[in-house]
Length: 131
Image (cartoon, rainbow, N blue to C red; front, side):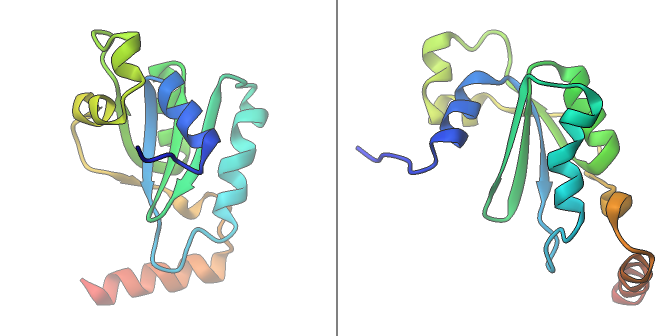
């Protein structure tokens, strides 16, 4: 049996049915990651969690509205676990992954929130010339 070493992630995965996945940019989030971690307290939200998991930063919320607000602020792809998933199924990572539904539409990219202007200009310039 495999045991995870990330207890906080495991608890969040089993407790929350709504969230947002944000792909980590090639150079990392920089200062934007601080804004992501401070956002719940500034917005008065207490029932949430978040963590980085390799190439994805995952935000968990108790309501779809909170997940949508986080997505509006920082981008990413909103997801939810259906209410038909039983408490027992919520304990199984395989069942959660199988049941996770991503909202339709393109992944929003809004990481410029806490980004200095010179870095933002460089990223925009890179995006223009790389496409």
